[in-house]
Image (cartoon, rainbow, N blue to C red; front, side, top):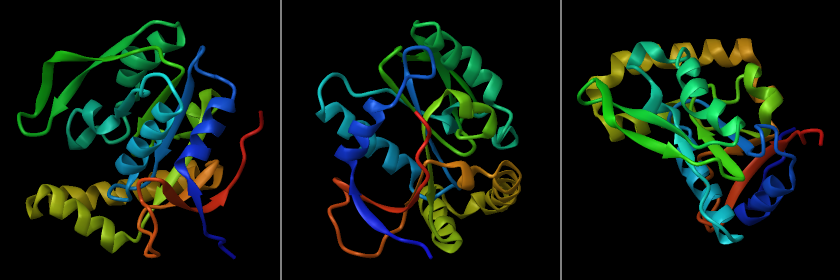
Length: 212
């Protein structure tokens, strides 16, 4: 039986800060799940909650910005490692070049990523098994497939449907092989229907606490 409970982002932010840092001195939070599930919104609200506890807002890296087009769905990781994770692990600021999906190339201006107490990664496959030893928290955000498709088309237009359907097939295969949802510390409903303060609360579907 799935138990659904509304929880406060503020409480989750405190739990993140109480977790040990595993990427050097940085607590790495991965917000994973299929496209259109609500990962970007969840990551932003968690970052806002962390900022309200004091200090700077933690950096949020959206891995869609690191993909070299549609064919780079899961193979972007070396780029992320070299430009962001390795420097932050060593206590240095990282930087990456954002991919323009309109121009179909990486933009020349680097996006800085400070070596902060918390770094949030958001995107499909960021909580992959290979990253698990360095994660302080792994979140899996889920939503019905039809709704996720509607959200993506509303955001990017119907022209993306052929690529998007291929992308969704790749997601399903990856999550099944990687067992991402089963390994996640926290599973979140990205499309809750019960009324609530969406800026302050999220709907937790299940929780598998990570060992300290």
